[in-house]
Amino acid sequence: MTAMNSAGADLKRLYYQMLRIRRVEQAIAERYQQQEMRCPTHLCIGEEAIAVGVSAHLTTQDKVFSNHRGHGHYLAKGGDLRRLLAELYGFAEGCCGGRGGSMHLTDLAAGFIASTPIVGGTVPLAGGYAWAEQMKKIRRRTGMCQCRGRQDSMDGGGRAKQEARAEDAGSDQCGGDFFRRRLF
Image 1 (cartoon, rainbow, N blue to C red):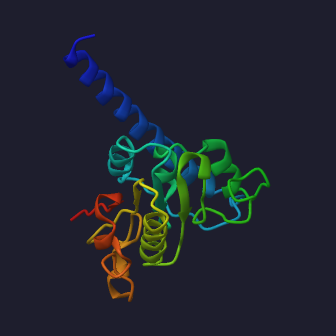
Image 2 (cartoon, rainbow, N blue to C red):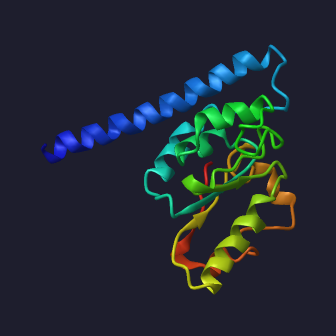
C-alpha cells in the first residue's frame, strides 16, 4: 500500500468513526422522546471530529476525562456502545451499573476514566489524576478537552466562572502528559 492509499484509508476510518458517533447520537435523540431512558441526556452532535481526532492519537494507556456531553468522547476512546446504551436505560449492564446515566460514563479498559455533569468539574479531576500519575512516575497522557463559546465538550464553556482552571489543576506542571482541546 502506498503512502497515499494509507492516508486515504486513515481518513476514511476517521470519517466512519465520526459518522458512527453522529448516528448513535441521532438514534439516542429519537429514542429519548419515548421517555424510557432513565436520565437527562446531553448530546454531542457537532463535536464528533474533535473526539475522533484527539482519540486517534491516544492509546488505551492514555486517560481521558469528559463532561456532560461525553458520549462521543466515550465512543471515540473505545468505550463499549452496548454498555453506553444500557446505562442510558438504567440497566445493570451499563458502564456504571445503570446508576450513572448519560453524564456519568466510564470505561477503564478503554482509558475513559470518567465524565462529570458538574461544570468545571473535569478540570480538577483530570489535573489531579495527571499530577498523581506524575508523582508515581507513570508516563502516560491524561487529558480533557475544553471548548470556548459554547457550553459543551469535556469541561464546558460555562466553567470559566468556576474557581478551577486548568492552570490551577496543575496542567502546566504536567508537561506533555496533559492535553486540552480548545475550540472558538
